[in-house]
Length: 304
Ligand code: R2B
Ligand code: URA
Image (cartoon, rainbow, N blue to C red):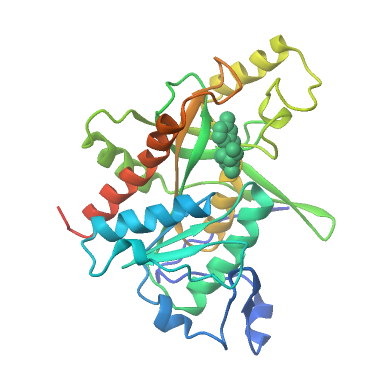
């Protein structure tokens, strides 16, 4: 069964679940929020940008950075974790920007997105742009390059996200917003020394064998087979590899959210498997998607 995307003209976030209307209360368990315990429209109704990324610390640093970039009142260091009652995910806000961690891999991001999308729906948010900012392995590109995804593909290079529902495989489209990707690329051109490109992003279920690494606890293939696979991926248009983009694109697309994926490459997978760059270098690389998104949000808000 194939399902298509759900962009709506109203700008509202769509939830495609008739059962939700029958709930007296919706408990967003992993976020420690709920429709009865919290006034979600008052807390989140004015959110316009949602940024998601793997690590809680990185997403706190991003909220603090946005606080400063937007010139908000108060001390950026004081941003509070809105989901402090749950140690699954962390959530911070800076003005109209929400910054949330999603952990590693499709199951983790998928749980967070179900609850986040319901939160945006209950809060009656409009015209929300959602961006995943993350890390990845590059393919034939220099370490430190930022890849803006045009299409998220699976490990067979297909633009699809397969989810087993009641024992059947449901296939969902992984299209992302092309105009948003171009807008982000245009922003990147205004930042000096900021290598950025648009390309396909391959999403896998594993960091080691699943990404063709030779250095896991298990490896069932040769170095030649690995390189042949990565070269096939490159020829199919893949420029980086990570672990969340297909589920992110599918869920956001189905619910009418304009979505983008912006990941920095920590290494070139055609050159090796291990991430060896020093911590300071990796830290600066991980800040690149944040700097690009800050420039984009400032521009959208007319701040320069
Ligand atoms: C990128 O980095 C993580 C693995 O190291 C994973 O969450 C991803 O997509
Ligand atoms: N994240 C991944 O998923 N793969 C890499 O190679 C680096 C970061």
